[in-house]
Image 1: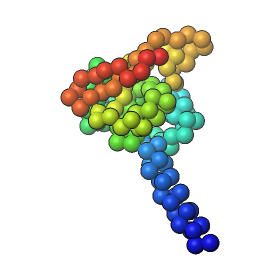
Image 2: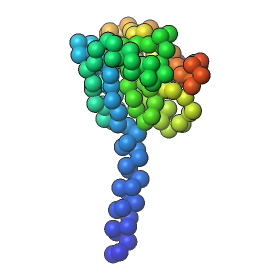
Image 3: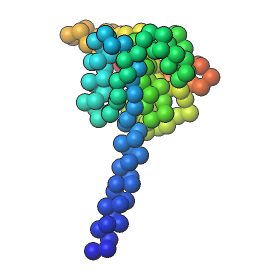
Image 4: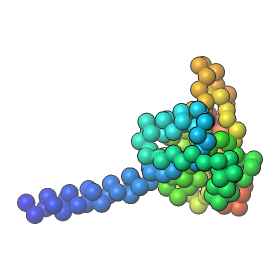
Length: 145
């Protein structure tokens, strides 16, 4: 019987880092509907993200603080598990990033491609790349959609 409290403690201890990795914040405009749709996509995938409605100036400051350059920019920026997530990045790609833990700034989907999470438009889908943003500012393709 003494094993049960220890087992329970170990289960809880192992679950805490996983839960912490899926928590974060999303910096966005209060009037952006596609940001809300992306937030819903992420929440449905198990992420716990706190939306922060900010001015355009504050949104740009957050992008710069997190290491997102203008060519990688989109309409919202998130911080999840110590990484910047810029734009309409699919939840599965964020999960892969958190699993692999590369030494990088984070992921970005520049612009707002039709068919990416939050940018759905019926059956219309533009191909898009998810970029891994490296700490030196360069990027490489992390995933193709």
